[in-house]
Image (cartoon, rainbow, N blue to C red; front, side):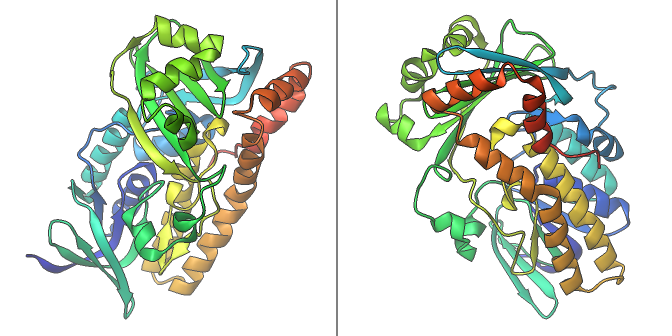
Length: 380
């Protein structure tokens, strides 16, 4: 057993937020260790669309969309369960890239910057005492750090351990979703992202790298339970009632027959600091996937937390000031977007309400642009 090696920062979770934070601190000359329970590269449930507000920040991390020749998405299609469709130019638009590729690229940048990336290692305990963190892991190691970042995604054993309220909330319409993702090959415009509604859920389709498309949907756990946990039966009998989804499922080549899946997705409000740990990405709060802004929020929250962490490590601000400033800046940057997402969510997945919304929005493109703008931010 290795005992108590010292780091300036420990990052729990190696997704977009955790890797971005790690790169920024390591490049500034601080020692960083990052724990990721999976082995890179790996797939995860995600819409795999990044709005253009994040492109300049990605370049600073070493990810250039132009050099990578990533598809630019500039058009939006939304359909109701009955097939009625709305089309709109997407401003600011975005790019498509798989998490399989992007997370792996960021991991390589992190290693090049000097981050100690620990793969297939799960954090089991985080304790704070006498101005330092003690972190224990599944490989029986214990490390200490001056700051800790929780970037462990939508749900984690740490959430349960800390008894975060959303983990124990009674199941309701905003905290008991499942997410399913495939990579497919299909015939669909390269510059378009589609959002197709079905009963109690919605499904996105967008171009990513190579000849692949991301097909990712979210629905209630109840929908899956109706079909005794059989994902393919649910798709056939519920999703394919939407004629657009039926065409996709019947006329596409599914690269991975078995989808990537996640359960117990919650859009309840979350805290941004727990036990002196700064929480970033989905661990701090999730915007509904229909807004297409979750990846950008993860990246932006990493930048905010890293900026304040650097000031703390450079002894320019206190720990209390770092935590208070992070919560305030996070709320200012994202709380209104998340609220907009929760309100829009109420209309989608309902046959009646989604049909109504598309009917009233179709003649008024400026109103559609308004909702898009409300769920997105400015370049950072």
